[in-house]
Image (tube, rainbow, N blue to C red; front, top):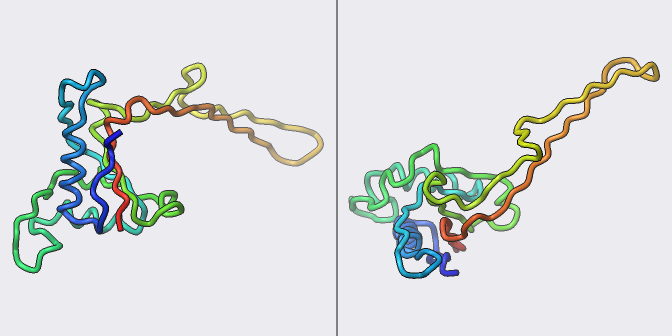
Amino acid sequence: LNNIGTTGAMTAATMISARTVRMKHKGPASKVYLATVPRIWLGPLELGDAARAIYASQWDPSKTTQVPNPVYGAIPPGNVIDSPYLSVSSATRHYFFADPARMPVIAVGFINGREAPEVIQFQNEEFDGIRFRILHDHGEAIVDYRGAVTCAGV
């Protein structure tokens, strides 16, 4: 699959490695480089602030002297997403995704095209008040793994 970046502490260097892996992915016929850069960072809460700092820093935070940061601004602040759900399985594994408009990785589908939850209201003489039932039927599927890269971290 070749969508695994360098293992190690999250630094500008490991982020460059993930970008390189991402850029070298080839299309299904394995002849043409897809050359799409990562535009979304997704990881556990433990790494979110560090990722934001690395992408927002003009100087490489892992260096003791002022060395320009090669990934400065590569991923916009709003596209650095950290989640407690990813902390459960690993506090260091993180992911990079291509721009979903250019190369979607995950597709979300809704039953009967209904994207908003359906709210059903019940009133009954057996109880005071109103009961609600909320239905939101949806499903997710992998469209193309080539739009993503993962790094195990430390």
